[in-house]
Image (cartoon, rainbow, N blue to C red; front, top):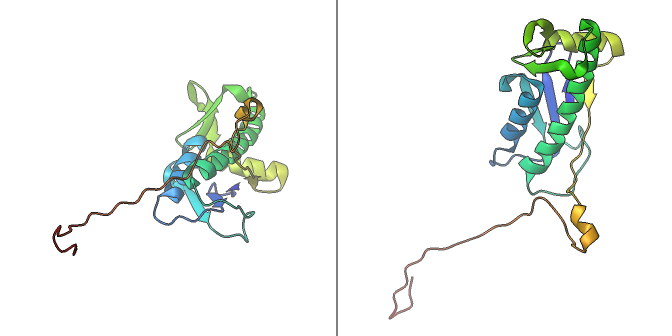
Length: 171
């Protein structure tokens, strides 16, 4: 879930739990890039099933959750582009989001700040901009008989380094 408040702050609610692998930071960077914002403008709230639907997996968090967060950010951006385009009398496909602004490509002065776009959205819709997305592995290979298709598999390896006395067998 990506939610933009009237002050332009962006919250991303995801089901994964960051346990040191950097998943929250990855999601934060993905959403910030998609919305044309600095990373600091995006806050990730993870692992709270009271805020987002539950999920059954615990692997490939940055990949799977990152794709879902990006899809939700694209939905929000498209909503903003429609509103800003109407306001500027432009076409949505002519707009870009960069440096905290939404503007006509090639004319940064012809646009508005992301905060202004968030407020415009709130005035028009009477609610904060919000989008929900999920990521599911592509199943294109199922038609050729492949099973258990996923774009991301969880693999692990373990190793041990030990010294053993060949005569006594002691470590």
